[in-house]
Image (cartoon, rainbow, N blue to C red; front, side, top):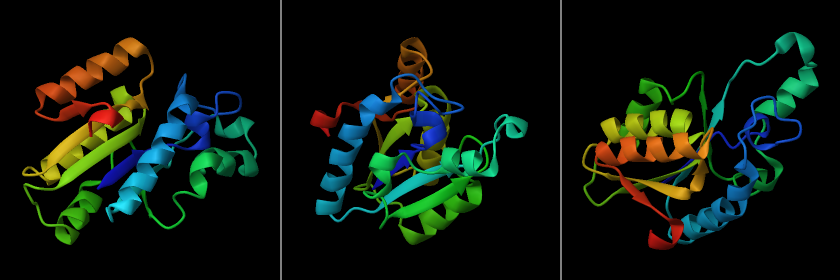
Length: 173
């Protein structure tokens, strides 16, 4: 199972994105490869769409809508996969429970997580999924995640590792 966290224009586009994460565009090619790999393996793929607020008075409705959309390079690749809207850092407990109901908590299940920001939404969603699927292996693909800073990225990875999540590079998965 693959979870792609918040790869939306506002977070990824470093020119126009209202909340852009430095270097977010650099992980897009590897995420596209991972999507293809997971599809070939028949794994379910989910992506989050953060329903974030920005400087609402300064943006037109069209600009707000653009900011919420998937980054263009990922839009086509994810069109046949499932979006989960979220209002804060993580998917809701209800959405997590729905997923648990759909997929049994299997010790052979691997949940791989990629996206932005490692130290905020990736961390929050990893904890939610880890709590929802305690028997599964939760794996963070560190070279497909970007944090607010490289230091915060590393610290978040260390926290997730301390919570017994796997931290791997894409070539190790």
